[in-house]
Length: 620
Image (cartoon, rainbow, N blue to C red):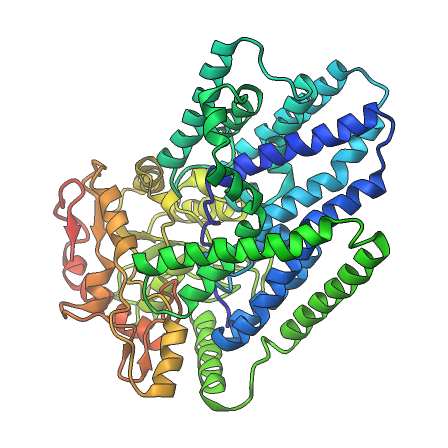
């Protein structure tokens, strides 16, 4: 199955950023202190990291294997298998970045997704001790200048990437190093000392907590991250480190036994929370209720305590686990986990060849393949699949435009949802001018380099005239639904002097594949899978704009669902939607296209002088 869109990466605001700062501070203090005493050993440093990180990580990963066999679909197990290999090799952040345009599993359904931050941390600590060793003979001021300069470069790169390549900015070490480096810089400059004056410590620690709290409350999934918006939580964490002494209010709060206890098991809690919530979501077609969420939180801390008590603590004991015994335990475990991951990937998630699982997998693969053909994958739709896999080659061979006799000429731009829109028109006899690309944002400010090339190419095509309307649509992640970005997505198309239609997101149905498998197994469709939040967010954003007369906002839900009270992803046994991203099956595209073409009938009669719809008016 080929999941073809670009969801944004998960927004684990504040927690990860504060964790990076504290980690950079603590590790740098240890290394710097040992270097000044002349007893630092790079081998001993990596041994300590292995004792701290690997045992609990491997236990969590091993526990995911039976859960995956019981709960996951083969395609989900295949994605998990790939993640297990990458996690063991501390490269899961790179994997999730590479897969961020074609996620096999939604972010909240991926049991290993949280390990990206652990990978970033370990990649940093492979290199950072070597930097400190290389500058061992220099003054602390020179070292502080070096670390500060590197942090500044990383921050500038993060700010640029957060607005142009948000997935890379979120996952990759060059754009996260400044957060770890900020903690390291505090350790070098202050050397573990606190700010001297009591009132400054009180004010500084209080301000630090406020900055962290503000970020947690004010930021959402549409916040460009981790550029300058990450400064408040990072600065806040730094202030707490140098100000929150035992005598301050913040220091006394942080010393309360419950918070100290949470701190002791925090690493294990971090490891367990994501798989517990992911498998719970995979086991249900609906959002988790409040009681289930609290139960999962309790389970997280219960498992965290057991893991801290019986795994973390023993492995840190050098008497109980000598270096040879540590190596004899961890090396085979790592090899076994990699082998299991490779086997799961090679067998496509241990897919069985009989029963409803095979029937569903075969059907979805066939329909996805047919969909790729209908959207012109690699020919009309750029997604590095099909015939032309580079943007230059794609544009050199692009020839996807021109209506038949008596048909209006519609230009379509956007991501894979827009490609479905073009396929829907094509299925009903209207040949659009299609220029779409996988994961392409509508706002030029958010477009990747290939998407900007597609955008520019279509504008050049439209400048020659002959187009009656321009249609744009998207998956519309939260960043694109900010009013300024949505306005920036619409405004450039107005220069061509023709009406511009903006289509809302299609209906979203969540766990389509899992629901279909349940239908094959039990004979009944699960009820109430329709989700409307994304479309509502779209219209909430549209209502903040004062749109020109030539811009028409159309409700895709009304066209897809008609006026029926029940909107479903299948009609009897015929699938209309293929995945949680609302991609249409060939039959779904045909039916959706019939509704789209019906809206063109009156337009054919008044293309020359269309009646203005009024600012922001929605048509159904």
